[in-house]
Length: 294
Image 1: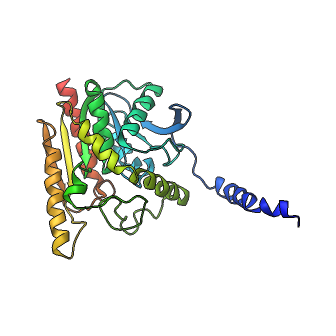
Image 2: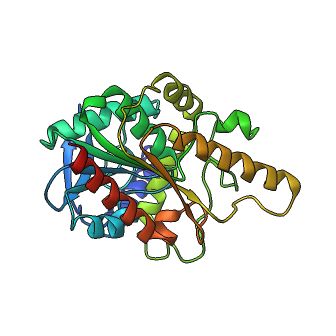
Image 3: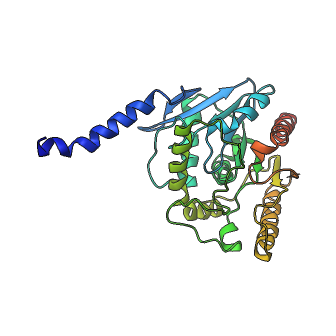
């Protein structure tokens, strides 16, 4: 075989693998919107205002929230989207920090023709993104739900060194899924989520600083849902970190004068998977409160 042909074999092999996987990727459940040379996927269900916008945590895509979306959509319009790199969205420009994601959300809802008002729901890292968005667009925000959300001071308080590259390790950045929680998830969606999370983790320090900068939130109803089961256990250091985590969660509860904190007694970090009823109830409560106040 000529040497020139050998040089192209790896490329041809990649094409063969890509073609084999292409047919296995699940069909797009919602719509893809161009936000400036790349497209973001968003699925909206239900009718009415305010519109609920859900931003998932690190390592999760929109499909992890379909159950909660379906149930909450009985009361109002509920939209869940895939940040660039996740799910059915294109990869986006670097760095993948919260300010960039907030700007992408603004373009996304504009392209989708959704003017607000919005009830923002953020799990874990998603809490960073929706807080920046709320600070940038206070007049459009009707309420917020933070689901075991990240705190901008957590890395210093918990003495966690932010990794430069994504690593599969047990820490507050990406917590392992409980056995069986992702067994039905398409393998290609899981692979995309892994790569997207790695890019976002590399910019977490930037994101935390951005949340500290954009900290002027509107006075709107807020529910903070915090985990009840410890993620760090087995030693004094773990117990100390859990106490600090709950102190930080109380800080989030103080972000609004119209707020409530709820504990998911049977859940660790992934409350949306282990106690979805709590999240659905919180969303519905904030929607109802926002309608009364407006």
